[in-house]
Length: 412
Figure 1 (cartoon, helix red, strand yellow):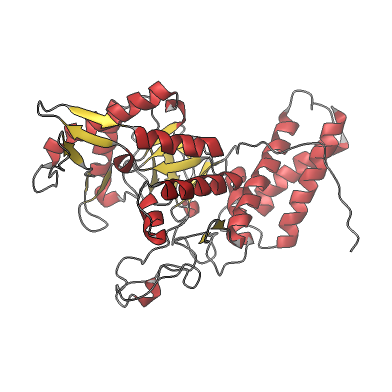
Figure 2: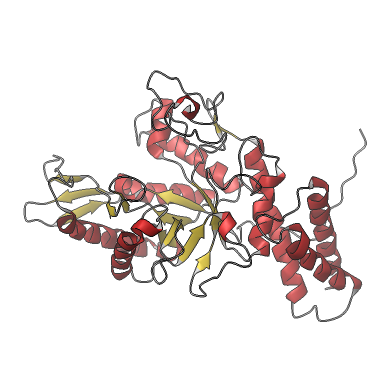
């Protein structure tokens, strides 16, 4: 088969200019492979996860401080902290190229989805190794808040000492809605006092929260050009089991372009990051009978299709990679995400080339580049509902962007 290859005179940066995070649980990983948490086998798998994420241009990792930092309360009532697991975690992901620490959620719902948020409890030990009872029944919310304050301040001080604090953002609680946004804002306000300068980030389902969230992450259907924006916030997008219908998402039964277009929209709408919760949740979903076996290779819903009393997760929502015997196995969707992030870099580089100080002339390539960028915003990816569904059109635009970048590089 004859093959021709064109090499363009530019390269994509190693580090993505669009933040990207996909969540996983180290406990789920250990449980799936039946290995002891934080054993050398466990750390080896964490290295594989880190390397796979970096290869797919993921630059942030959800970091469960409560599982990585051991808290001990002395007889005098003071706290001491063992950061050895956190250090190894950060070094493992940073070595692979995942530089940003995304502090895990410090609060959660007290009950149903609309209930108020309460502080998340973390293990606290005595000097002789016994675990204290810090449940809400034993330690009321107002008494536990100083525990959270000292814990987060200690973590932040340690990150500063290690030189990692510049690449650190902190979650409060996932997906606040109008019914519980007040309790979310209270906790966000406290964390802002304790961690000055640390951006607060969360996936949100409320249009409120102004003044308390720094990196706002709404579902992608709420990021269109007509949606009001706060100039003091950094805007991302996320998808999960919603939105559905005509909107982009990464479900298993969606055409690949519905996945890839997310990153064209990110450029077109000026978004700064993308979040998804399901990198590798290879587990039985909530409410699934315990006698139902789960195989990520055979069921892309966490076996939630067997739940009689709740809507199952859409296919592909819980995970985008598969468990191999000794490696992380990719998926078509995971490779499409990588390609979409590369598309974003093409558009970003072209935009920078057009805006560059040396590009003030009226060359044919420069004029064509401006027209292509305008077309992407007006026709290819104008908003989350009205975007191209044509693979041919999308790939044609990427090819043209590459050719124009090459032409503009030759003019320098």
